Image (tube, rainbow, N blue to C red; front, side, top):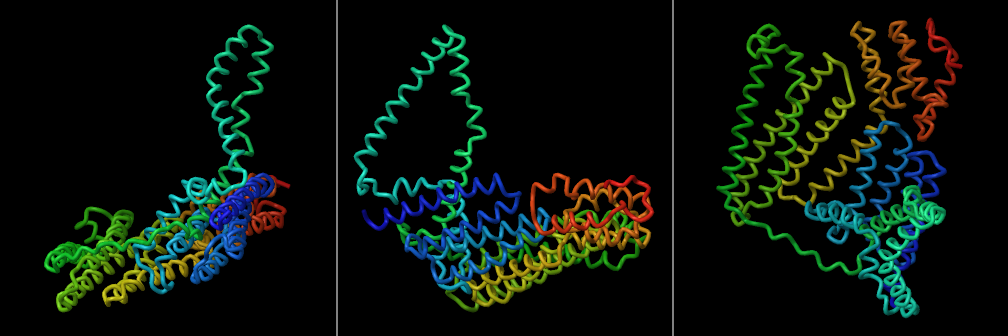
Length: 492
């Protein structure tokens, strides 16, 4: 048996163990914690296969593993579903980077094409699961039980061919004997397949094999074909970028004029109040800024570099457009802040602001790398900035910050949206309890009752586990009465 077949069999074995282990923790461990344990087991399985030579880890993989080890505890730290999704997405980005490892010489130089190939490679590997292992990696003729396997396959084919006949005969015989029909119906009822642990084991193991093979299996991969870079005339690209810049410049001019209008002048000119103005438009501005960046990046990739002077002029024109995009982004951020001052802070508004701040950093890094001829350094800096923003979000706890801002507004006399406040994740509960003194007596009582129903020890929240939910349950246990001065009957 050759080495490749042995390594493929080891990969299948680890995938089976991941499937069995994943189903066990799914049944016996609270939600989220089961996923974290499975992710940790997958990393340990990858490390074991790498140490035994079944899988290959390139040198830069250790840094990706370190980033993953910093991210995984965050999955159990905060309760926010949005933050949980961002953490999972970041782990997927790390896996895509590992899958593109053969094209990456160092983590400080990552081509965009490599990340795109890595991302699509991970998706295809998870969809295909063990099929490539069974179809190409394992040489079945090398197995000592190849003859028996062929015999078993022949038996399987014969049984499969007999299934239609058995169904027809079974229906006829069941009509002749009701007891036989009832027994066969119970035996072959498809209901048991819906809750079958074997199906769950297969699905989890399928995903595990796809994850491991996408990031660490290098055998059989042909040489990566470099993308053919089309060299377009600088005049064409200059006209393309200039047209975008003119439109943005006109819009920025309108925005600058509106900033100096008083409230009355603004309403007379725009036909809407400042609050209505703040409510509309910022998502469109963010989309413009977001979509413009890949367009400018693609234009820089296509520009002909035969004459350095034309490249310099193109970069200067692109830099001017980047300045306009900065101003567009600043206008969107201003609208969002203004909107928050009128209507309070929500998750959508908070994460939009965080995204815009990260995008502003990406714009600056684009100018420092791509426009200075260092294209390969653009992706590493962008990913590093995203990781820094993600860790910052985990530290500051967005839901707690949202609750604190809205409670401070309530102390200033602004109406409080109690239903939204209590709908936040368990991250916000300690902040709500500390700031409950700023609520009205009615809001205070009703808010506590809703929080107790959502996060108390007897609530449905106990089906999932993380540190925030544990802290929330303990905080509620420490409150004997609903709240000071509350007339709602005690829940304990």
